Image 1 (cartoon, rainbow, N blue to C red):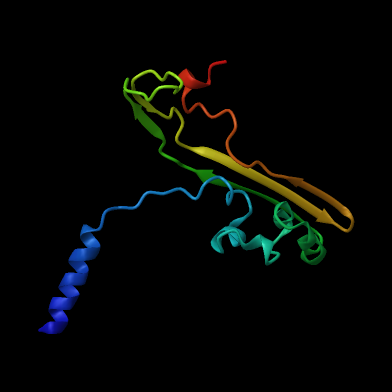
Image 2 (spheres, one colour):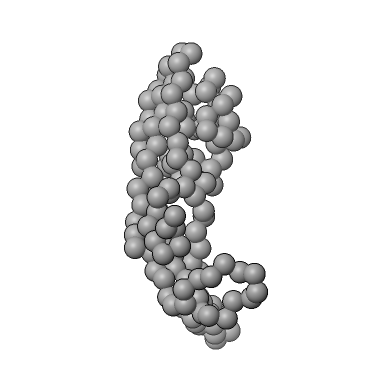
Length: 137
């Protein structure tokens, strides 16, 4: 009986747990699936030519290769502002602002051949239409 009560308590606690929504930031995207599966461990271990973005010495051990890939990043971003700002703060229009784009493709490309190295990496999503009211200049 004690075994069933413990199992039921565990099942209830897991099913009632609040969902955790977090983002890992922009840094770990674009390094390839092997590196991402190990939390971006390219600094310590050479998984491919893209590891040169964080550890250029890894190119000595990865050999001749070309890598092309992409990551999908789907953040849900937004904020709600009110008119009660502390003194000295920049004015923000009151209201709720949601991101116009919730899906970003982050590509990566790397090539390592003998002594010729090409690497293309983008850290972040520039020109994001997150808040056009604040980004007008």
